[in-house]
Image (cartoon, rainbow, N blue to C red; front, side):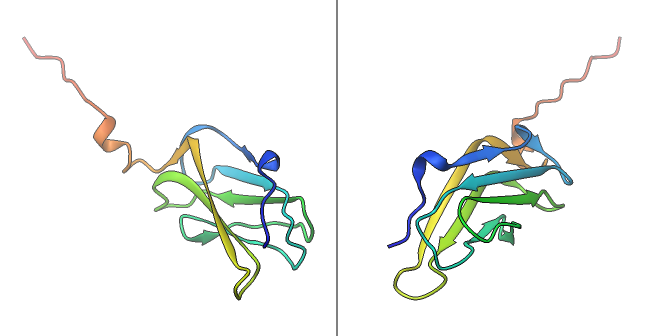
Amino acid sequence: MPRIVPQSVVLEGPSGLLVPGMVISLKFETTDTRGVPVVTLFSNPASTADSNSPFTFSYTIKEGDSGMVTWSVDLGASGPDRVTFQFPDQDRIAGMSCMKSHIHVSHASES
């Protein structure tokens, strides 16, 4: 069964709040030799120029992307050997809508 080498996983890019246009990346090695994995973020495909492991996938944050960054990696194109891995990124969050509940605005009272 295909797997990702745990020690090889690297999450890169700006940390904190991500806004449209920012680029983040996921690097990893895999034991799967049958092709390029399918990697998505916010249900959108990430891109790579690599055809063999190790892979580096990049993703540009888009309008509408919102919430915690969680990469999804599918290995084993189809069939019974297909395995999906999830990589939550605790250092990054996208979009302003997810921050609204954490923002407190205070107004100075007028005299």
